[in-house]
Length: 360
Ligand SMILES: *Cc1c(COP(=O)(O)O)cnc(C)c1O
Image (tube, rainbow, N blue to C red):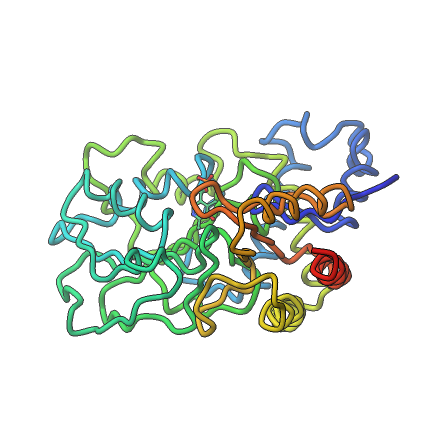
């Protein structure tokens, strides 16, 4: 068996032990005589899986009791609509910070339902930094304040949260959830497409403070109302059963093999430092992001020469380092080094880059 080092931004690498366990349980999940893909989501055996997934997520992230965990479908992209439909119910206005394409898509969607005010943006420099946020420019009457915590495409992240006072902070954490500890109590809503750092595609996780549930607009589709899923413990309709099962295995790996989010953070910092230190010392490659806002998960870099970039991506793939091509809107390269990317994978990538530079 030959496996590559996969630097895909999403769907992305999963821990090998998780894949092995899923393979071992494929034909007969714990004596049930079926795979998890085939069983009824209303069965006792599946009920234990989804309950255990939620309990593990609560434990690993330290989610307070006054928050609901929802296992949904539709991707983070559906949350761009679900958030305003459920939360834009007071002043009809919400504040958005534009730090990249995902934040911008979220703001555009919210603007269909009300006043989605842009508080700050880093578009002027192709989203290579996180803008300074001045709380005196925030709307104190806003129904919520929205940020994208880690910008998957441009490789920036917030290292401090905006002070929004009583206004609920809503964050898209698709590409950084579970990468380091997070104080859930600072947020009204956290949401994530699972395919970056949690599970295969198909699952969307929402963590929402209970008092924010139950105020959706009348026109809200039943499936887009948080209350529907909160009342039914994410079993209103068929949940993404297989993804939830893999998510449970990933959380077991995080808890038992890694030892929790503090340890995960240390490992992620070590991996990111390996690559950033090399980029800072290289005369061929360079990072594209302001140092203080650099992401731990997504690391874009360029040579400054498109032909050289293309050659690098091609030769890297041939050497077993795949999905290093940058996002179509940015060009260059991007290495996504999510939780499941081993330190070894980043070390070997840096060695390969060093060799490439010598021969360039
Ligand atoms: C990938 C991604 C999305 C889109 O997620 P889907 O699940 O494909 O809708 C949104 N926001 C961020 C930050 C992402 O990384």
